[in-house]
Image (cartoon, rainbow, N blue to C red; front, side, top):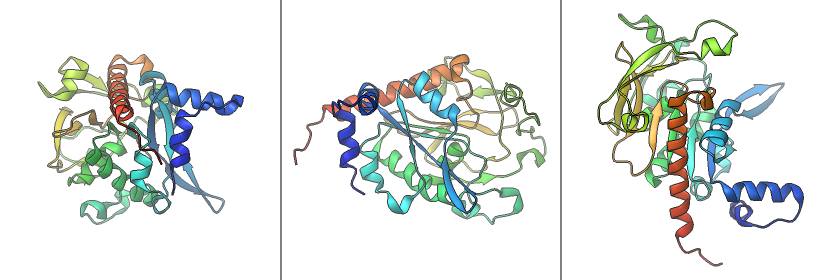
Length: 283
């Protein structure tokens, strides 16, 4: 796919009101890509993206969010990534298919989103290799661990001495995404530098977690039962962080979430500034 039009859109001074508004928005704030989940309905495949992630990127990181469809065969990843200055890997209802980390699939591992797996596992690898700012949340956190060689464990609550990391059964989103348990933050780590403390409260909306930590990751925080709650990419030159909890939920109202998304946004703008400073090739 030729992405020349996409790059041109960011810098074009368009005169029509609709296009001018979008061009102005993308020129003022760098683009952050968010991968789509997929689901089937009435015989059609749909690509979707949660509003809470979009709002956190737009309102707290102050960047322009843009959905990346999960159609890996139709996308040239490097051409696509030439136009993004940050990637946010979202949470999802689905789980990474176990064969991707050497496990046999069972009912406990379901549900799956194979189209998302096909896109995100390749996407994360290229983002890390290219040094593009990366923020991974929940499923995205688990995808990051899998891509770098780690494994996952399902139904954490069944393990001896484990907390129940699943969300409360309620239609009240404030209850479901409310503070659930404390995490201990690694002294001197990336997360401590961002949050400025060594303990905080987080929500818990997952039943899977890290089993074996990938060799390319550093644990940045853990729950009281030892489950890893945050990681950073070793040797990263920019923001490359993952959280098992959901900092995007009402991010503007949570001081920790504000610090995380502002740090991500600062890294995205720094990446955009460095990229835009490079001489442009003239066709």
